Image (tube, rainbow, N blue to C red):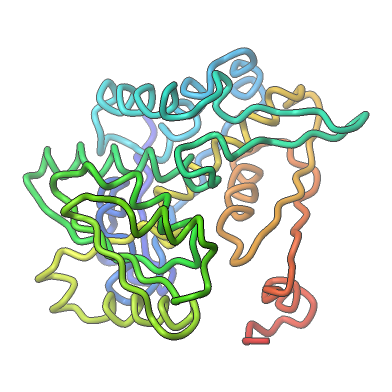
Length: 305
């Protein structure tokens, strides 16, 4: 039997290895770093070929199980996955359907979830995982998140029924779309709290990081995160890259992905999939005026524009 994957902070704190459920609840490491695995689980061509014709939920189980280790009961995790990736949570039987737009070009429809954002695909699963683990461990947590719109609405939708979670979402006033603002601020649930700040998304995120850096606050409030700093969220996003590749003939046919991106969270999951062994030929980043990644790859400097 292989040794379960352990998780450590990117800032080198290796004296306390964490499990999959530990990093689910912790979000950010105490030293301010992000949790990453001590090694990358690998799937080979036979593993990917065996996924041909499977449901999205079946693929999710096979992709995420190596990251989970023994921190969750297999049967419970499967129940959670099959409850999540099904109708009516997502409105298409394929969950993340592919639509052909050219001879060798396809669009993956990641707007099939309850808030029409790709983030539903990970956050709907995280909400169910939080509920199960917190109930099992008889704990309560406070989720703190910053959003420019879609993370906030998707997180609130996923967590609004969780009895052991209070969620606080910070967003920059006047800098989200009207639809996203309404999605966030019209949910009538006692555990949901929205805070609009004068400033930018970066200002909101800075406050979140400051709160996580306060050890007493983290301990007293049981702080956790649901932004892309949460490792488990990223592992859930690997699944749709694997599902798309398998549907298009992988592993026998390499696939390239072009992904619109702001802070690299979504496209990083594509890189994770390739690191696991998925035959991804190219990963293409699409940026708009929020071009910090473009400038980083061109200059090596990560600074505000």
